[in-house]
Figure 1 (spheres, rainbow, N blue to C red):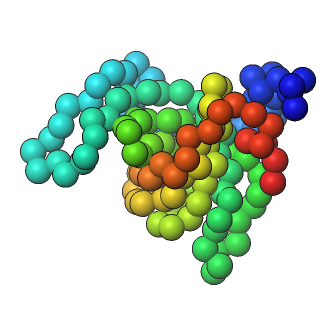
Figure 2 (cartoon, one colour):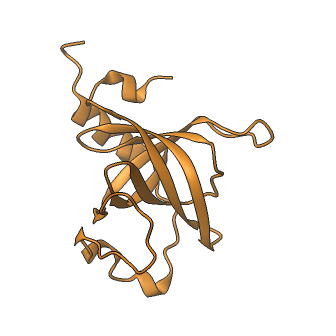
Length: 143
């Protein structure tokens, strides 16, 4: 649709969705970090990572059969991006092979969960494989 305003729709949805993440106290400078992340010894990553800290909307598109999921959007914080992957902070535990939709202010992504690490009961660090990078359009918000 030519009359669909992605950024306006995103902003309205952000107003409706609360962030239920409880960040660890040691992460007080989380949103100040940005730029290229250094490689660590024995790091097997194929692409360099870049820290990008922003708010996003997450929806679970393909849950595991044994774990019932809500179809509503939830607020998440992005952590880092690479050519083939995304890291973000979630308020709930996610499981490998779950398919996700991450909506950001200027584009949206289809993701596949690779790993999830618990920091506390309301803070999980998720690593996801990028399945598809999508242009900003109305399909980001549809079922």
